[in-house]
Amino acid sequence: MYLEPLQRMIQSRNPGPVNFTDRGSWRGIFDKNPKQTVVLLVDHKGVGANVFVELNEQLQPMRELDYLTYWNGSDKIVRPLTIVATGKVPFDSVLGLSETHRDIFWDAPLAALPSAEDDFTTDPPRFKYNRSNSHYASTQYRKRNDVGWRPDKSNESLLKAQSKDLAATQAEQAVARGLLSRYWETPKGPPNLRDSVWRWTIGLETGVTNMDNMGIVRDRSAGWGTIPELAV
Image (cartoon, rainbow, N blue to C red; front, side, top):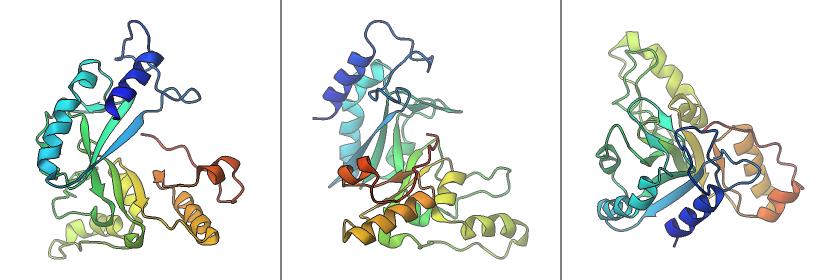
């Protein structure tokens, strides 16, 4: 339903031989921003591990055409389509992909990004959720202020870096990890509440803002500000 039409759209934008190793040569599906990758967020229902295996198999034609953004072991290589697994997919399923060609990324838990597995002994810190395994960091709007972990105060030498991370906004925590923050189930109404939430998320410089009413988005009549251009 989604992969085959996306494949046809990307192929139509890149007729003939294309050197996808040169980002300047390929075109994504957006005319006005041809280097913008399209993110396909795949919501896993039921037994997430089984769905993940099926998704991984179904992506093979796209993989062979080099259409998928991937982690090559040291950097994220951007392609026209970026696959993000969300819902009930286990994090271990994503980690189980090749470390030198991981092309399915996780939707990390924005409300609980700080982890006991984060390593603050290095500069910069090594985070459990990072660009090598995740793309988005998402949570429900109602969980926007939640923090799921507190630092171990027995090691005072690490407390400064940990405390700075914990004191940051959720959007800042995501940026530190190289991820795009996203809030879902934002209010759809009444209009004044919806627009206030849009202004709040844009002012916070979240990576993705959920906007279901595209008419209002197009005419910019709500006065919710300018959307910043954020790196992938």
